[in-house]
Amino acid sequence: MSQISLEQARSIITGAFAEGKRLNLKPLSVAVLDPGGHLLAFERQDGSSTLRPQIASGKAAGALALGVSSRQIAAMAEDRPVFVGMLGAIAEGGLVPAAGGLIVVDVAGQPLGAVGVTGDTSDNDELCAIAGIGAAELAYRA
Image (cartoon, rainbow, N blue to C red):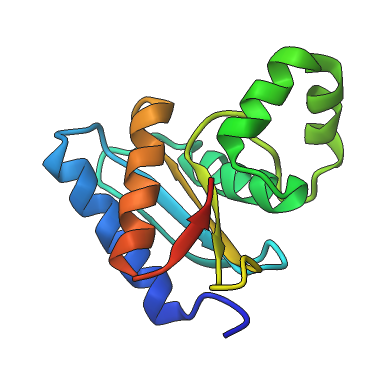
């Protein structure tokens, strides 16, 4: 397997939304990208605000671009704010330094793509990304 399939992407989105419902979260938006950072699938729940597609995609794309979760990018931003700030200007798919973006990996740890979730707190977004990845029976890089 070299990338997330469309069927798996749909399972990720469904699983993330189910976790959001279980936790009674605000409306979520979920982006699933292939390993090259191209959008594979996206859905937003009713009531999601207008910038959510870009935020979800930016969380996932940033994770792929730097090889770490968007939570780790947020930590990097605390230590090196100018560096991370400048990355946003050159990152083709965007870069959002807040939890909710995870790299999906195969059994060897190689990237299959990434998931970005936004809509609630960043911690809750990440919980939903984890749940979605699990629903698709895939793994992620923390």
